Length: 277
Image (cartoon, rainbow, N blue to C red; front, side, top):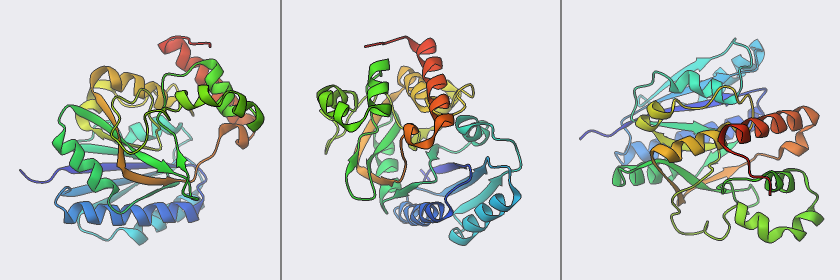
């Protein structure tokens, strides 16, 4: 059989161009390694800019062109539309796609050179698994725990908004929510809640679930999709698929983001069931 094909969607909104540059550079290297290992035949990379500003869109296009000259990679750009939200923007690429796999990728994620190869090899060897997510590290090398159990309102409030002193009082509880008792150097399956910063998904799983729910403008679109994905396929955390994440908490991004976070949390619990404590 010939090697599979992959579509990658990256959604930007007023991006940090230096971070996006690093993301695209590391992505290019990961694609090259997976292609050399005959785990990939062709890649369609789509950069979706939600900013709506011509100058920003031109900068994003320029960065994409600078990093991808391989015949294995086709570049496409979507811009000039309104800010339709994170999940809906990824859906523009996922809906109607015909590649074997799809990678949802944040513009602030740096892939290890073999990250794609590890994920694609695992999916090829485990037909029952429809989604894989990576081990995530901060720029300082510390591990981030982005795999989670189903949340409660208390978990979200503590993790997102409580000061460090309060964190310490509830450390055991938060560690369990972040799956620190199981996430480490071994494969973990299933993963109840996965981060939308990096999700490598089979096409069939997208077709069955429909991708992200566009009613989640920002935040919890990945929580919602995780719940729905786990109903139709197996999910797995792969410790050998490693990435670096430059993201931050909603509470540190101002009142507007706190409002988005709160509204999306309420929508999530109304849809999938409340868990207060």
